[in-house]
Image 1 (cartoon, rainbow over the protein chains, first blue to last red):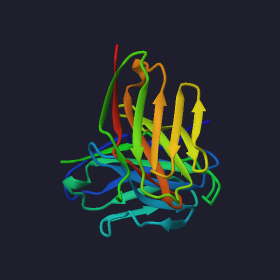
Image 2 (tube, rainbow over the protein chains, first blue to last red):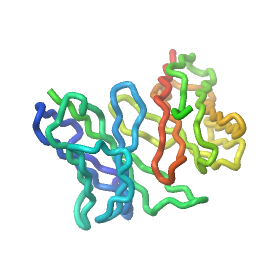
Image 3 (cartoon, rainbow over the protein chains, first blue to last red):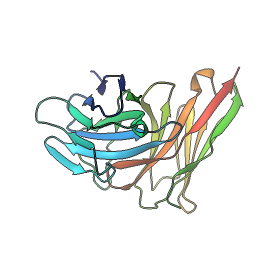
Image 4 (tube, one colour):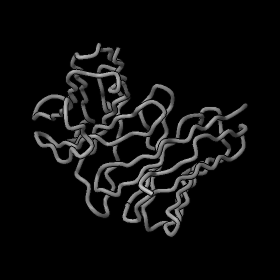
Length: 118
Length: 110
């Protein structure tokens, strides 16, 4: 039973290029979360998606960042025109169902993609 | 405050107990979590506690929750070198998304 998979594990881009990060949730999970971890900091929430829907994007930068979770295939976090400040580790997590009061929806994390912008 | 706060660093000797502390922000958080991150790896869920509990024990791990002070702690008994990692506490004040502390680096000296 494979866990959350992310690829690539390491990604190097030059300033101005595009970065595409992929996340395949655990089997049977239909909810995906993306988090960003800047060096020596904790993880910060970016976006929460269900299949074909963005549920909460309150943590996404207003420009250059977008996310999708199509009906088929992995979730994609896309960063256009990358800048040095985008260098970070990007983690996705998945859960099998939406959260609700009194339930636990343990988020299972992938190994992360470490983006380096030169 | 608006941030989940943790002490930055803890060093213990192998075999001793480790206690990692966390102050969270929102008393409405239903669940509070402890995650472990080893170098270059993702986050591994260690344990969680429901907000109406004071304590939860799971093998070498003991979680204590003081809701009045919004204080959460993780005690690791008989700490081993393999426990060396960064430990994050996290809360869920806004529905599903996790809000993390900056992490506590645990170093275990043999």
